Image (tube, rainbow, N blue to C red; front, side, top):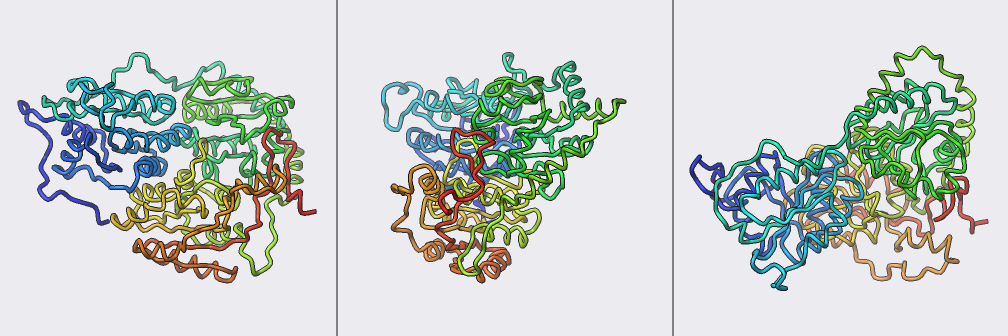
Length: 585
């Protein structure tokens, strides 16, 4: 990769008696944490840190074109690797531009450390140039934030920031550094441990509660495993798969957990919720014991809470965050703990059990009947391009370890429904906040982490324009990603909601002045291909995947009237699925 290297790199490791400035301490702390790359955008308040980056060679900086993309790219790196992503922004508009990326990571429990500059300590509160209250602004959307008020505290705060970001329920942490502290000089000593007396996540779970859960699962006639993003974060996917096979129980994975259980496995029922499969949602309603591992019972998953809880079932809820348990649905057996440890303990107990498992043949007959609805089927006419066909063709052609980085909208749901994810951290998307524009920066972060794997963006004509300037970043740093733009000329998901719920009044959801995406891609130095009929889809995808050293933008002109089915309308329960267009009959 064409990554920058300083003209005169020097070591920032000080001798015992030497002094360095605060900016050097920031970079040295990153080295101590094993950080190799930082995404960012400079400004006056962080120029000392940028100068420190220039004077060393251990940490690489990648210059984005907008601070939002810096945080999204660091987020994409974290999602792909499980490591802490790092972004660096300046004060004022730098940090406010970063807030959307921080909030995106917060909702999806992604480990980030975002370092922001601030005006000198003496000027804080005086409405100085490019000053804003970064601590107050970000407080609702971070796991924690720090304003550094002394040079001596800086290394310890950075140690705490990384520890908080990666442990317990992961999340973003902001460290706001005034410029005078970046310039002050002192001796650097990085602490070995983070001393946080009030922070001690429960890891092992309550033994009595785990035993209750094991007893319920052993006796269940209709068990069901509901797996969320927490299982991925805790590296629990292998034990979850072992548990499912031990119980011979069906499995569903949330949007955030696609790939945590192989989509090709017969036990897998697909994604649940608003655009989930009929069989996944019926099983959610009809099971007698529901085991939730690292999931939030989100409104897009269970729909109307009153409807969901009307069906009597035992609910076992495993989550490392006690605030997530009982927040929307009260469980029968709550277990606070790390998913990997708790599920492994469950497996140990189940293997020791001498109680015979009940006959679950009737449960699987019901599931087979629900599957027979073929709820994801769609009609092809051989001419217009169906977006589902594009995704299925990509699934067939792409290497098994391809990373799919989705934006937010109809294309996101079609990808979730029709691409077979068979491994964790293969699917990168904004689940909780639903942030348009994440796809391209996510793909950049993923490609930096794994340069030998394909990094593919699935986006729409609306989403891609949110961060399209990052095509320049891809060019500068030799990050060859593939962009599949499912172009229907609409803000597709907005249009679909207007179609179903607003009497087909398509208020401001039509994009009347779309750019020539292929010409734009070429202007940024990349390859562009326009696809206008079904016969062109497979050859174009093959051509794009064969291109190993250039980014390729595929402008796929899909059927503008195609919508995402099944669907559950907002406020309705899982028992009120719309399987096809209600206005087409």
